[in-house]
Length: 468
Image 1 (cartoon, one colour):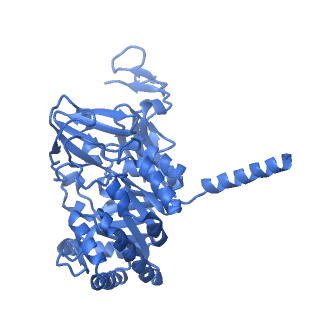
Image 2: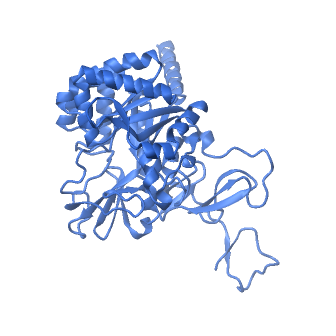
Image 3: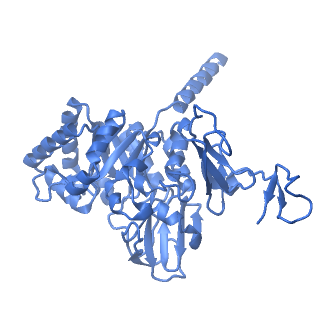
């Protein structure tokens, strides 16, 4: 009996060690339409930090032919040429990164997918144009972003995947699909999950997917818990149970905020009456939408709340209401992903993060995901080959000695200072801002104002904090 118990303990330890060493994928979706945004929301190729992702997904580049032939078409040829987007794909592949082209993503695309999947001649046109495109631009694979299939599309969806898998597999291209993780009856009847899992290399669980998000009341974009159809936890567990291949499942994380206009500014809880989408931001210029960077830059003006039951933040200002993600909510989602042994996470979308570091660290939300399932080595820059000088003797991110809300980045001997949002302290181990209650903050210093008796410039202590 003791020998059997010992064997069980050893086996359990080995399984735990294998789980701990598990490799996760971090898919970074990039909405190339972000080129049209203004000022700080304008996203360029050089804004991408390649260290943070394992796969890059190019969105809003291609679609299905609006004329109904079934073939692929470039959405905006002028933009693609002007911004050298295809050259970027070539460079990604040359540097051994996975570059995926995404097709679809809109309601119009959903109808075109439905018509193409139901017709063999149109499917043939799609396959020919896709293979030609993947070879010409040296892509790693394709993501079918058919966002709103119907129960009538169920069998055609699987037939499309089964044929496409054979074609792509011969050329070693990856096949990804984006699916809704909602739990309403129509969505559940639209997917034959076991068969989809059999053909797809990765399945992106779109947790914010909602065909009509701006109903008569305000709703959370991606609540982790809840009894409704939008519960991320319920959706993930359902796909894990039905697919039987959890490592193919990739949890979608929305980095943007969805905004509403309240009908009554005094009613601010989730479920309050809504007039519809919120006012568009000057930079992203889209009703009902705000990037995380756009929101965090003005967050001090909003009343911020956190729903501990749903595990999501929300905020309101006057008649505007926003549902978004922060480090706390993303950490909770990543805990679920690891618990259910998913294959990784997808960022929707890289360009919606605080990629400039306006509110703290560059790519603050993405780095929460990296801290959970990525390589910790890339969260802090490696030591330079030459010795640093002045205030930056080492490369990396460091908390201010006397202010736990403040931190700075040292890079190539230069220091850049940042500050966490109110109510947050900088966690130096994780390299990110976290709720102050979760961070041990030791502030051991002596305060002094110029002209105040006790100290002068001749005898200032090392732990002195000078007040203005």
